[in-house]
Image (cartoon, rainbow, N blue to C red; front, side, top):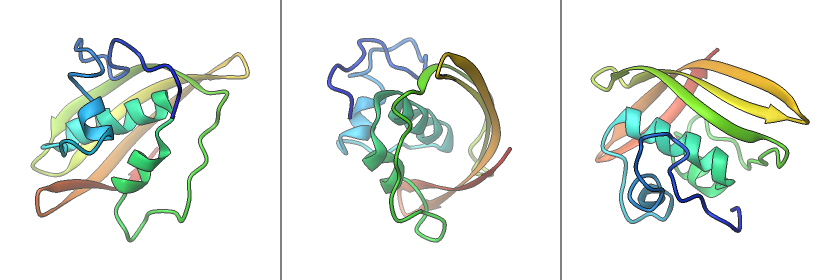
Length: 124
């Protein structure tokens, strides 16, 4: 994980990182909705927390390992509506890789196992 953590949460909730996604990254809390899990996963990309990404990935679709692109600088998260009853979240994430802006639009599926929401897969 990155050595200097942001003061504001990368998911752009308006809260501090400590009051928002850091509690999910540290394991102190579990995301109660698919939308909050998606936000915490976006923030995990932004702070370089591949362990959180793997821990919140459904076992049937989770890769054995995950290497994050150290050159990617995640800059903004736009999302669709929170469709938590369906476990579907649509979002657009933006990053910069080698100085080039990259846009990723995805509709992500989530499943709740017990109290935990898990990412299953996404369609771009």
